[in-house]
Image 1: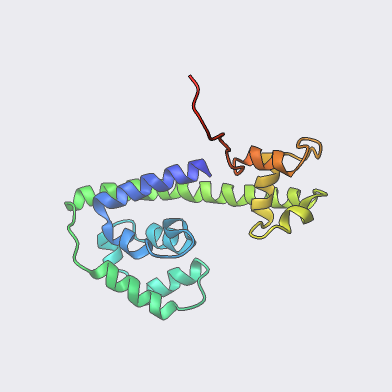
Image 2 (image 1 turned 90 degrees about the vertical axis):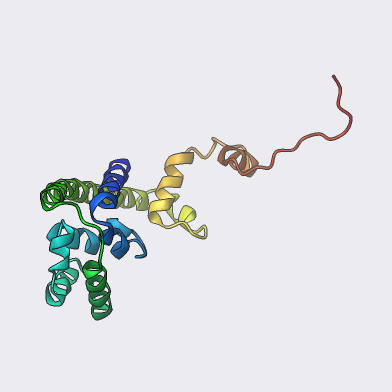
Amino acid sequence: MWARQQIGNQIRDLLKDFYPAALAAFADLPSGGLARADARTILAAAPTPTQAAKLTPARLRRLLVKAGRRRDLDRDVERLRSVFTDTYLHQPPMVENAMGIQLAALLRQFEAASAAGDDLAEAAIAHFEQHPDAAIITSFPGLGNLTGARVLAEIGDDRARFADARGLKAFAGSAPITRASGKKTL
């Protein structure tokens, strides 16, 4: 996850320098932004602003379908088309092409890191579901299998580790700190 975040930051920095339309196109998307499969697919197909401006609506639709999108395709095709064809400052063509090559290389690394992260999450979930306390942990509001596995990894599975709930609360850092009030002695 750390490697994926680091590569994602490198991609975002590169896009700021030469491809701000991509940031505008994918910044407001829920659950992932540039990490979404549709964003990665479109950026891989059009790694420069010039190439993105040449994407036809039919090609954009095919790319979205390839990325797994099924709903609101017409709306998103129109939105992406208007963002990519809008006027932005451009780098000289040779610089833009070089930055496009760099973006394509980063996207390949990002794709590999995303796939590895997804595989790791699936393995963690599979092992967590076999744990005897999995049903208890996931019964807490907001804890699914992956977040439950993270909680279990953090607190451990030794039931004698904390004498009572206050000990776990203090370990988690959510116990209030009480300070004695009154006269100060020196």
